[in-house]
Every structure is written in structure tokens, then in C-alpha cells.
Amino acid sequence: MLTEDGKHLYVSYVEYHNLIEKLALKVYQSGWEFDTILCLARGGMRPGDILSRIFEKPLAIMSTSSYRAKAGTVQGHLDIAKYITTPQGEIAGRVLLVDDLADTGHTLDEVIAQLRSKYPAITELRSAVLWTKAQSTFKADYSVEFLPTNPWIHQPFEGYDRMRPAELLAKWKV
Image (cartoon, helix red, strand yellow):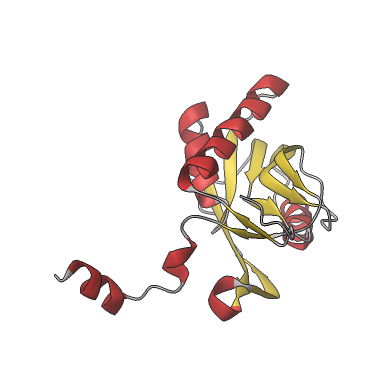
């Protein structure tokens, strides 16, 4: 649900999973065949996992981080992992790069530049995101929703950004 001022988008679990399914359909209907899904952790992990299951393709993971301050609401320095975790040796062939959103585009631009320079065995690379903000300099090959007002997206699992083990203990009285 987008707030009236267009500054916040609140997404339920049902809506989130529907977006992932719509993204899968966009990729499928394009007819493009790929060998591996590479998700960017953390935002791309849930979509990457589900797409991996739907398409029956191996899931590789590359960790990136820039939203760390204030419970993940402030973007800082971009860190990109030196290595990719993949179940089948080194990543190669046709790769679908998955993240949750193209916000500014900085992360996806930098990751793609790194993949092209450090992984010559990748023969074709396409990208898929759930959301693309108007402010993004990056345009994914597959995207479900365009957000012209650049809202802050409140994803359904963000409550865990502020939850600590002591709070779980109190909640569940274990």
C-alpha cells in the first residue's frame, strides 16, 4: 500500500510473494534460458530462492551491503563480497542476477562491473528486480513495478531488523 504522499510503500507477505511470481512470469515469458541464478544478499535472497525453485536452477549468492545504519534505513559505503558462493564450482554461462530493487542503481552497476571484469566464464548476464525507482540509474532487464515517487519500501520482514533475541524470548516466553 502506497501512502498518500507517495513517500512510503508498505508491502505485505502476500503482495511480496505475488511480486516474485510476477517476476518469474516476466522471465519465463521472455523465453530467455539461463543456467544459474545469482542473488544479491540480503535483498535478493528471498526472490532468488523462490526463482531458483520455480526454474529448477542452482542458486549462487553474492553478499553486498550498503544499508546498515539506523536499522537498515541509511545507505552508506557499498561493500561487495570477494567471492560468490555457488554449488557448482565457479559461476559460468548464462546468469540471472536477482535483487529486490533498483534504488539508486549504484549496487547493481557496481556488481555488474565486477562480474564482467572478474568472471569471464559468464557468457550472458541479465538482471531481475521486483521494484525500480525513478531515481535509479540502473534499468533491470526484468522488473515488476516502477515507482515514480521513489518511496521507502517497507518489506514485510523488516521487523526483524530491530528485533533481538531477548525480545523473542519475551515474546515466546521460552
